Image (cartoon, rainbow, N blue to C red):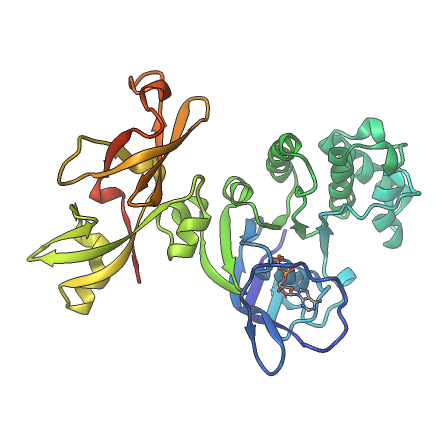
Length: 384
Ligand code: ADP
């Protein structure tokens, strides 16, 4: 295990130089300076010994670049990376005591599973007995003992990914880096491998840095998650902290399925009390949610109001409820998602325990009118 310190790290890809690996197409809106494209901007993170960190964000936001800089596969343009107090900026990848698992597995096709897993140990001249012990232990942890004599082409995608992980963990690295390791698997296998990674984490002593664009993976795997957008860190926190207190509209919309509902609203102070007004309704909110408004010393402010679908409640039509028409219903087993259009804008409501609350989907017809509200304690307020 090891601590990893990332201090003010930046990556600039010069506009005109040759590309060492093919850049992915992304929807990122990165800064372009005279030096080139700023793929990672002032990244700071202290990773504790044995921690599982997930870098998450949309495609092209700089996650892989950051990971590759820790691995030593990409030069650092500015800043410092330390692995256990050792500055590694100029240390070769093989001397960093790290291992990396790639999305495309990168197995040697002509070697057996055993041959693939032995390879990094052979390079390091690990004695035969020790090599066998480590390969067999890793194979046992990953449930691939029976496959040790097969070649990669005789393996399923999930099995190949296990071998790739096996090849990384036989080295007993201080830090295990994983770049979208589950993206090439189908949904069912992905869920299964996600729990395998949780189990793996309990069995091996290493620090993990894991890259994904999938917020569910991030939420379920990470001790802490780092949400990135356009090369910049948006928020760092435990999954619960990020879910409960998103730092901005981007994080609020990115984390959580289905997505948070957003409304244009006005925050109003009335003496010591606060309320939000939107579409003609008014909902009281607690002073602690309005600290920024209070600090500004003004009485009103335009805000973006966010409410998670599960915090919306059905209500009678009235002064504190919004009314819209049901556009679609999605049956999800024990709950139903209702898409309700209010003045042409889609809101998502989750009805839970559909068996018990009496409002089964058949009661809610597409096209019918529906009113809903939310508690002031459940809203998130963001500056405009
Ligand atoms: P992510 O992993 O979040 O999808 P990447 O780190 O792969 O994002 O890429 C971040 C940005 O840097 C993207 O805009 C990408 O096109 C660009 N990029 C990545 N690698 C290179 C490279 N070798 N040369 C130039 N631009 C690159």
